[in-house]
Length: 207
Image (cartoon, rainbow, N blue to C red; front, side):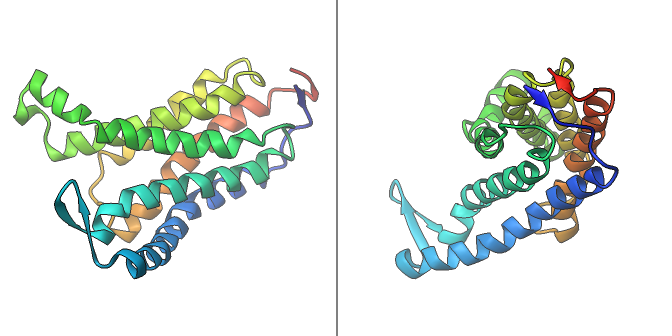
């Protein structure tokens, strides 16, 4: 793979800003999409005979998919300038977001509670573990592409885990606007710093 050149200084602020903004933009799009869905199915939806509020039930499915696609697109726009053949980045990023959601939904915390006891899995730790899983799955999906371009690409997974994991130790939830902004900002800063380490020492050459 050909590494075209070292990024200019503005690449890293642009990476942070665009990545961070994808989360609140995804939330806005969620409201638009769910209104369209409600116009067809109504305010309530039945799943396995149980009635759910449509907007609440579909929130994570729509939000995670939208945020993953937007984040992948925004980062791809920046990366393609310096790394060729990065079209799979969008799919890898969206797939990482969705994989993280799947891991959370398969009741992994129920298994931990069974092993460690219900009291060991309180709300704070459950949120931290959920975010660590998201960081791990997103980082792994993107690492599959970066490993062929950088010899120390494994750091990328660690950066995502740290960026997402730190959010789990903070107060806030999906209804908190400032926390949603941090949801994009913390991983964006961690991955921007890792990109600086990976890309700056290299010279334009065949990797």
